[in-house]
Each structure stands twice: as C-alpha cells, then as structure tokens.
Length: 145
Image (tube, rainbow, N blue to C red; front, side, top):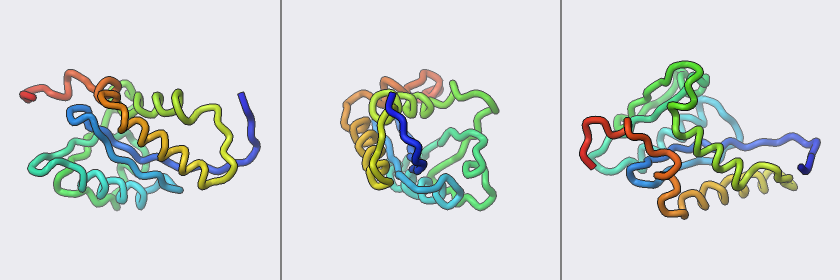
C-alpha cells in the first residue's frame, strides 16, 4: 500500500435516496455546522417537488448543533448511538473507499477534491448502484411505490 506522510483532507457530505436511485453531495474542506448547513440546503434543492425527505443522522457534532438550519422539506432522524448498520449511507462511504478512494496518494489538496468528486459522480452514473447499496425494506413501511 502506498504511504504518504503529508496530511490534508476533504470531506464528502453526501446523502442518497434509494427509491429514486440518486443522491447529492458536496466536497468541503471542513466538517462543521457551516458545512452541514450547506449540505442541508443542497439536499433541500434536490428533494422531489411535493415530497419530504427524512435524513438519518448520527451524533456527530455538526449533525446535532443548535445552529443547524433545517429546511422545511427535511426532517432529521437521529439514530441510536453505535448503530451504523441502520444508516445505509455508511455502506455508500464503504463502497466509495473500496472502489475509488483507498490506497491513493494525491499530489495536492485540489487532487483530493477532484478524487472525491470523481468517486461521487461515478456512483451516481452507475444505474441501480445506490439502490443496490442503500435500499432497506423498512424505508417503505406504509408506502406504496
């Protein structure tokens, strides 16, 4: 495995909709409340008209900050502690790491951002991939699709 002693990172803020086999993401330099607010606004713009999104979140500080601005078409649903198996987004991250991001050395920060964008766009471009990774029967309880 290649090694690099330099340290720089970017964060992919992403959310998927298995029912529509799509998602939205931002690649940002920080993981904080400001970034989460940008992400929530981006998700809100992509929610289908006359629909409401439920966004599963864990206890990360930027997920539960009192300064979050949650759009009216989104509800945040906090998962119990230590239950990543309930959040299908964790499987999306695993897929992106295994197939696009792990074991790579990037020359500079912009290359990290580009790599993250390439990985996310490849995920979106593969028909059925999000649905196959993130779909859960319990997501549709009481709904007819």
